[in-house]
Amino acid sequence: MTRELSTPYDFQSKAGISQGASLPALRRLEASGFVIKGEESARRRLEYQATGRGKKYLESSWKALLQPRTGDLDALLRAACVALLMGERVKVVAQYLANASKLRKSVGPASLSGGPGLRDPGLYAWMKLAGNPIRAKSEAAILKKMASFLKKAPK
Image (tube, rainbow, N blue to C red; front, side, top):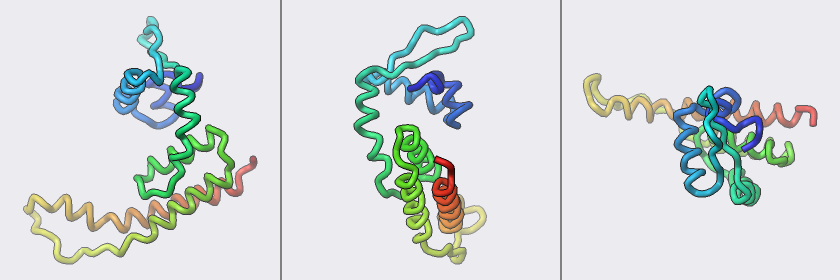
């Protein structure tokens, strides 16, 4: 938690994390003793602050986010941003994104044959499964572009 990200609204407006997602996460962090909640202001603005325990945990655990994985695109991009905010070298983060791109490219081609009928309850699941390789290819391109951007970005 920083001054730039201390309220659920900050998480939404600056980090793209909805208040509906940030509030339960902040409550769990508070219950674990990683953050404390301040007093609610007149405008119902509720600020959170990292505790000493929370700061130590963040410092000791954020690098685990850069392990190779095939998580969803948002999780990969957020991990890259956390790494940069925590001071990781740009080259390391760019390589993380490039590796994630390669993992995405390894997904097999889409098969649109043998789908269920138009009134079959399994139609949605089949559509999603059939679209996964196409989505993975697009996400691989996005990750590759982000890696290239970081490599060329001014330090």
